[in-house]
Image (cartoon, rainbow, N blue to C red; front, side, top):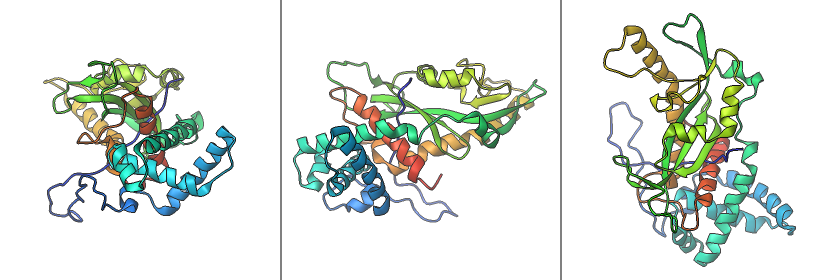
Length: 316
C-alpha cells in the first residue's frame, strides 16, 4: 500500500484589489515575541482534541501511564513546528527546552499522525460515487463523464538528506531546491481523499501518481463512466484519468471542454492553497522540513497537514 502523507501553510503580502475584504496578513519570519496561539493556527479546543487522541495512542503504544498535560505540550510543539516553517531551534526557543528534546517530541507526534491518518484520509467507497460526481461532456463521446475526484501535485522544500547528492533536487524554474513531491487527490468538497508523498521533487506528477498501488487499484475498479480529472501532466496515466486538450489549433468543442475542466479542477487548487495558507512549512520560501536522516519524517509531516486540513480547515 502506498504511503499517504500531506499538508500546508502561511500567506504572503498581496496587493489590495477593489472588492477584497482587506489586505492579506503578512506572515513574517519567526521571532520569540510571536504568540503561540497565533502561529499554531488552531483553536485551543482543537489542540486539546488532537492532544487527547495522541495521549491515548502514546499510552497504548509505549505501555505508559497517560499524561494529558505532557501530550498537550508535545502536540503544541509539533503544530508550532509546522506553522513556523520547519525549524527545530525556533520551536525549542519558544518552548524553553533543549533542541534535541524538541526533535524527539516532534518526531513522535509525526509518527502518531502517520499511524492514525487512515481514519481521516481514504479513497471514496462506491456508495459515495453519486454524491461526489460532477457531469462533464467529453467531445466526441455521446455519454457524460462523471468526475468524482481531482488530482494535482506540488513540492515541499526539505533539507538535503545526507549522502543523497542531487537525488531530491528539483530544478524547475522558480522552484530550485531540494524537495519532495506531494500529490493530493481531493473530492468536490475539498476533502483530501488520498496523498502520495516522499518521492523526489524532480519526479514527474504522472510518475508520482502511478507510484501509489492503492490509487491505481482504485482507478482499475471504477465503474464505467466514472473518472478522475487532472491537468495535462497526468495524460496517459490511466484510461479513467482524463485531462484537458493542449495545442494551438483546438476546436470550439475542445475549448469548451477545457473551460469546463478548469471550472471543476479549481477545487483541488484551492485545497492545496488552503493547506499551504494554514501551515507555513509547505511554502517555498525560507521554510523547509528536516530530512538530514531521510525523508520519512518530512513525508509524515505532509500527511499530518492533510489530516489537520480534513479535520479543521473550514475555508476553501
